[in-house]
Length: 209
Length: 209
DNA sequence: TAGATTGTTAATCGATTAACAATC
DNA sequence: TAGATTGTTAATCGATTAACAATC
Image (cartoon, rainbow over all chains, first blue to last red; front, side, top):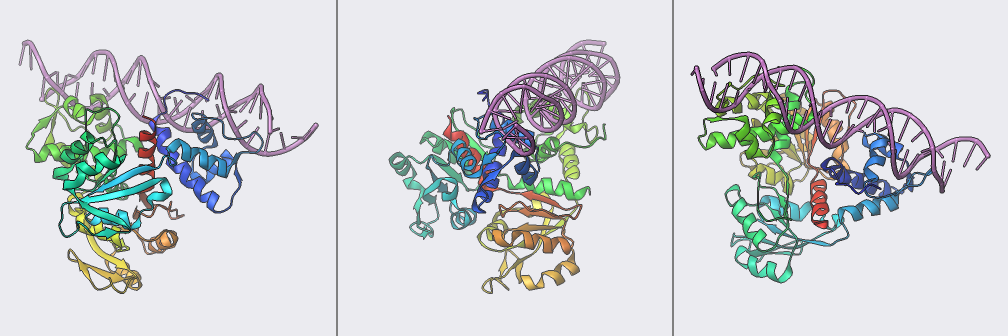
């Protein structure tokens, strides 16, 4: 096991490993070799072994990997057991859709609360999550200390809202606003879901084939 | 200008260039050097010039790049002028949110129609787009030949639905199902929006800081 | 034991950065 | 003209793949 800095390339493959192992696990597969997993995922066995070696030794010569064990280990590396707590900022159509469809629990997140400015939404409840007024944000975060904010607000208020939340101690942003956010505060992470970028990539590919 | 194969790394930076140039353009900036654009985007000037050289010569020595021109050129490379046509498969919460919030026109896409199986939705209209029954899919696609399908259906029906659409001639999938799709048909592209993966990446980062 | 498959080191490949002549 | 900045070639860096001894 090397303990050098983990590259972004490796980090971005971890969730994919987790997803595939979860799939194998739920289908009752007990063991898998790097070779088999690689062909299932369309990458080389070498890369899988190289990636995993950044974090430890999870396999066994002549046998391969125990699916349940490896799934658990990668889950641990990703922090799915840490019980991160999350608030949703903006309960419009997208926030609503995430609340309704997305299985936060399956990846170890717990939805604490949602916030919006619309009087029509405040006080209502979606899937057991109460929508609160943005005015309560300061008090709420101070009291319950959530870790992550899901940002689904209009572009114009994205950066000010992020800054406000960072001041309150939020350290992770799942950012759906299509605005690139920034901060001077160290230890704050932005994970952007840029819908536009992926659709443009698709446009590029179908335009030249 | 080199005309070798364009790497994925370059392709994935193109939408980002486009987004930043669009921003500069809308703010009235007329010219920009690779150096300035690089510091705005957090990448090196060298990389920008190297990337652009894959597609042509868009700058001028001693001057830099004309923002409007470069924006248009990259838009052209991405195919935003091609008027791609798109159908939405699954008009649940997520499909609904995309219809309501996402500016397809800004990236050169036109929403043709949406499809669902829910009788409560069929026949209704969202932002001028009619929701049709899935039963009409074959006739509709045969008649209007859309290019791309947005897939927001339950996981269980994702692959069969994709296969059905591929048989009808759909060549691009904007895939929100969290299922990895596949096909034997050449010239079909999948662009996945894996919510789970990005949230897990965020979990990883906040777990070790 | 023999076969299989790991973890790791070395080799290769590709992507990023640096340097600089060309030229606006 | 002099200064600025490109496009491109060369150098460096990092990531992927191959190879193989270790060993279950």
